[in-house]
Length: 65
View 1 (cartoon, one colour):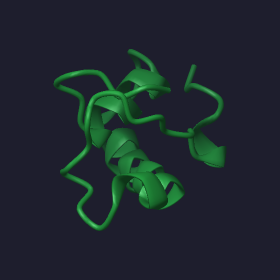
View 2 (cartoon, rainbow, N blue to C red):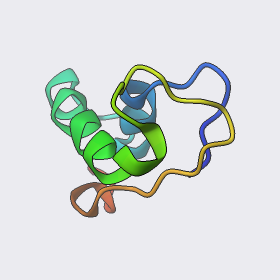
View 3 (tube, rainbow, N blue to C red):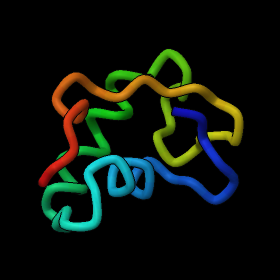
């Protein structure tokens, strides 16, 4: 998944989980995105850049139905 302009880890997690994702599910998911991609993102999860390639966390590989 490539970071797009305006993306945040929250929006990426929400998009990956799908339209029916609850705020609670997104809140649980975005830290896993950071943990999985910390070597790309760095120490600040609020600072991601367009063009960065992120790997989905194992737990989020399947979207919520």
